[in-house]
Amino acid sequence: MLSFEITPRRFIAGTFSFLVLASIIALFFAYREHAQQVALPSVPVELKHLPYYAFCSFNRMLAAYVIALFFSIVYGMAAARSRAWERVLIPAIDIAQSVPVVGFFPAAIYFFVALAHGSRFGVEMAAVFLIFTSQAWNMALGVYEAVKTIPEDSDQALEAFGATGWLRFKRLLLPASIPKLVYNSILSWLAGWYFLIACEIITVGPANYRLPGLGSFLMESTDKGNNFDLLMGLLLLIAIIVAMDLVVWQPLGVWAEKFRYEFAASSGPTRAIGMVGMTASIGPAIVLAMRRIFLPPLRAIGYVLQSRPRVQMLSEEQSQRFSHTAKIAAAVAGGIFVVWVVGSGLAALVRALMQPWPSEVKDIPLAAVYSTIRMLIGYAISLAWTVPVALWASESANFNRVITPIAEIVGSIPATALFPVIVLFVIRVTGGMNLASILLLLTGMQWYLLFNLLAGINQVPADLKEAARAFGLSRLATWRKLIIPAILPSLITGSITAWGGGWNALILSEYFTYQNHTYQVNGLGALLDEATYRTGNSVMILVSLLSMVLVVIVLNRVVWRRLYDMATERYRLDY
Image 1: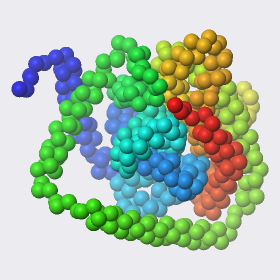
Image 2 (image 1 turned 45 degrees about the vertical axis):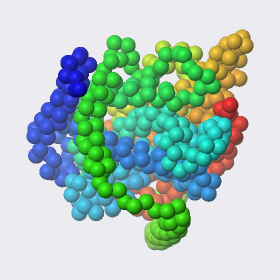
Image 3 (image 1 turned 120 degrees about the horizontal axis):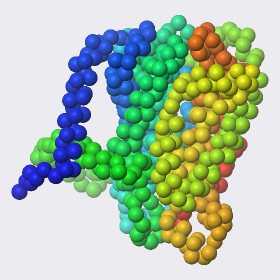
Image 4 (image 1 turned 90 degrees about the vertical axis):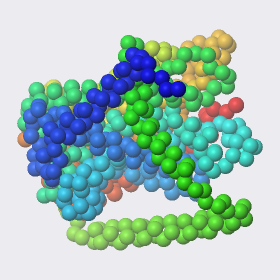
């Protein structure tokens, strides 16, 4: 019998459901004239438009995240489970994460915008694609690390029971990836907000597309020096981040704790990664509301599918023959597609490089040296504070719960919001852009390290910590013998993604415009920005990107990949 008792939790969930639907309908009707417009030449800086801008930006972020989530699961698991795929996919992702967001502008314009004939839909697809490029790589590497470090005993146990294919994915691979996916999802949203301005204002030479959204609003406010509107936009962004923590990340963090490796049954309380305390009941209530909204139609679809007449099952021999034929067909189709893509890409590359090269190309080697030095300094500063914070979080559960939402808020603030502070204090005091460039570079590097380290800390089994205390190990000895070795794979993954984020941040740290004045230093980011935003020279854009990719590949092959292989082999948790 159905129960219609109205409890406070059901009342909150029902009220929230009504408010969400009503807000969406109200926003649609209030701003329906904007939805019919193509990309705007400029975004009106008026506070009355802020709710609609936030609505648009959030939807773009959500669409990009859903695509990135499916991509990362498929990509990361394929790279981790197959040595042959690993040799191809991991170098490819090393290259992809080293390409700054502006490096994807030509592809976004010439493919998505041209595909939709310059319509608003095409520009929206381009923006979602650009946000995807800032979210997907670290999630895929997180899945790759989680699967690579699965204890061998767990893998062998499933093999002993004959679990293969979908059952192995469902019972082992996906559960093992969930804690990493949760933390890297937070990081992906952080990166999406950070690069939102670049994704909503797409410019290559004379081609300029601006979409209504929080990113474009913040950029327009910064360009016009309207600090009050800039502050209001940032406050709304922070409100969205806090709401996301309460609605999504806090419940997911509690749920992800169920998938930690423990050598014995854990009796400790479940830890949340987000904001807790008096707001702890809000997240579960909202999750319940979402279930009330989405589960009924999904159940109806499942009922319809189950009620359909069942198809006659194939025999085991027919099934094996069909599977073998399907694998061959898929391999042939995949090979043809790869050959076509690679061949087309090489032909396009040759045609582009055959064009006359601009004189600025001779500045690239020295610019690469300067950019690498700034990256090294930024990485050293990031390590200097993130590792102690992670070690402190391993000792204090309360600090662990507090640091994550603070990092979410601070890390999501776009670098353009810091331009007034950088200009007023750093540049005028030091008289140059080098220190300002390093500080801006930090905003794109340090959070990758911090979130990966926190994810590694939360994966250390509680019973191993208890064992360290039982043996009377001091705090320093526990860090040296247990915590640091356990988080070393996460540190290497965080370092790889931090360098990728740093190369992305070069476009904001080495060249920026504030109140019609351009500030820049010699570096690859500055050369790429100038070629993208001012001259639109495709050859210079291509050569700058290739130079950046070459530096990243050398560093990854010589340093990070060797360290990663060593860490995953020597410091994995095994029974």
